[in-house]
Image 1 (cartoon, one colour):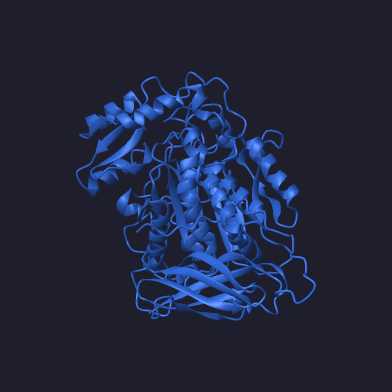
Image 2 (cartoon, one colour):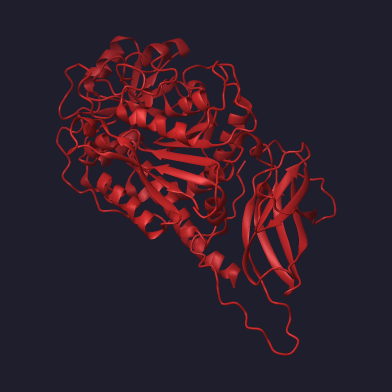
Length: 568
């Protein structure tokens, strides 16, 4: 019965039904939201030096590129300037087709407004008071100027408050660039999975019991309100830093600071602009903007500083915590550093984590300064540079202007990667070195006496080391003092990169009802991977005379974990 229920709900997830539509943003688009001659173009560069000069021009570069060109949203004046400087400039037909969608009212249909996102977070906190708490972590720039017209900065804290901490933290943030509407919806889908999955889905259940997950779905609400109205706003709306910027804004000229160039680590070293009207303006000083100050303050409360003060200092292998910032577009998983092509001290583990994520979402994992272009003052560099935690950027989707109808596929792509991030938050550098436990199954071979557990342990996404061991735990995971139950290789020997494992668990002393079984694997180098969990039902021993009624409680199983193996 459980297998059939899992299969049915998994099908619903695969079909994308987790996406919860909001109110359609169908207000008429402004005529000047984009210039009449706005166009996405390929700007061809001959070498890294020419690329570096291009970065100084303050163009609105998109988060995708080709082998010898960068992409930018430009107007006619900018294209003429580029050609005068000797650059070859060619329209990108596919992206301009997506740009045409932006000019229609139907592009935004379904995306939730800032107001609706705020209300949804409160609904979750009200419906699940022991699991979710809405947290006001600061004020937007506009609110610092005018309480009535600005916004609170909201995050949702998700954890089972009845199980004490401290607990490792996964921090997921979105929409630091206002116009990247799709990122908020993916973040909210993860909220929905966790809150509704608790008690129903084994992975959501153990994550909220033993980890703490924070989601900040709109980290730039002032700018987002302009984007809701059809303006191409990337930045916040701070208009006090000089310049004669357009009001209302267009794609290349707008008030505000690019919050993802304003972080206080490696601020304005490269890939950012001094021009207050440019899309990548870094602000007058490091962390000058209240949104960025609040974000850095929040992360300092969530994560200990685990890295030394010098650039070459590595974070320890035992570092706890992980963060992901969602952006669009490009189908990329990016890891530090962005401001230099030098390797981060923990580069091997950052790359390993990035490759694991990319194995799940089928994106490309890379260091942005090498595979994309230089950036500085970014959130992921700050998180790693200041605190030592692995910081990542996911560039979602295949076109910058992602239609709402594409969200189901984006969710299917990225849910397993986000789930993996939450699972390894305890010690991400260490756990990413170990194999994955997938395809957990259970069979009651002797009701009330023994339960047979099976799983697949795979190291295909971790360097193809041989599997050396596997073990299970009932209800209490290894870090909380659980008792390990050794699982054996189904073929009799641990000598493969992928092993089917199994074993029998005595359940004679276990109370009847539903229990969590945790499984993890170890490779030949001694690395344990993250646990995966499975619901099992402990049945009452066979009756002797008077039958004992079978428990009627069942998990609702509306959001089971898809059993996916990284596609490497």
